[in-house]
Length: 364
Image 1 (cartoon, rainbow, N blue to C red):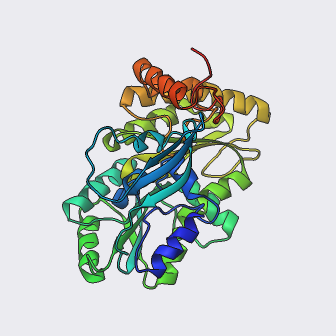
Image 2 (cartoon, rainbow, N blue to C red):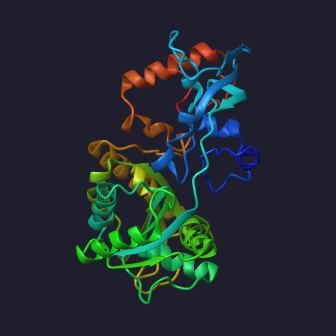
């Protein structure tokens, strides 16, 4: 599993910087096939950047070896890149050579409350201007926090609920706590953030992470939910969020929940169906059946993907296309790109036996 590889790296004084909630069950081959990222992409990028070499078995039964003995190897086309993020449609990864990093120093974390979404993206830009290099910059909204607190029986982090939250993690060896506190005092004075809580111990930092990492499970176990994993240029995220809220009518018992890796432009947009009214979140209960709700969500998806196309975003930031989004691939990829993908599929998997029907339908 990914966690086992991470543990082996730590035992030898190294670090595999792919931090996934599913590290205990995910496989390295799957990470590569999906070009996995996680919560620290803002600092370390996707797994593509850490793959030096691959051995792949294609659908035609060929074994292709792309050795990773050296960092620099400009001898023709780097074919291994075709298999990274291909969702297993071109070949099966059987071996991988990964580049490792130096372990980060002791990390510290802080939770911030903000009054509007524009300040969230402004805060990220402000931190970069202050030469703060985040290990993680995670966002969630009021609804997400209220649901995770209720589901996991967690105390609210502040004395009242705010509309927007950011969890920031950084390396104390790069920036000690006192200088960071001074910077945040200025951020409060400038009206970028309205409140902050700093982790005084590693246990408290872990507790802050629970607010973010517990969201997906809490939503799924508490509500009927429709999930989307999307990305857009960071300056466009505010416009995207406003337009999504305008499309979704809370008066019908539906509500959007936003959270995700906003430091790299990735939002997880969940649409909830309220089976009962929820003060401050879902003012009325839904009269829809689950079937009608999901039928509505399919219509909503098309509107959402149109917005993403217009804003230069992606209909799938990290979860892939699979079968659910294959008919919408053209919202993020040009006809020429899709045709090139089909030709690659025909070359490496002429019989169409690897993940058939994934990414795009078989045939012209």
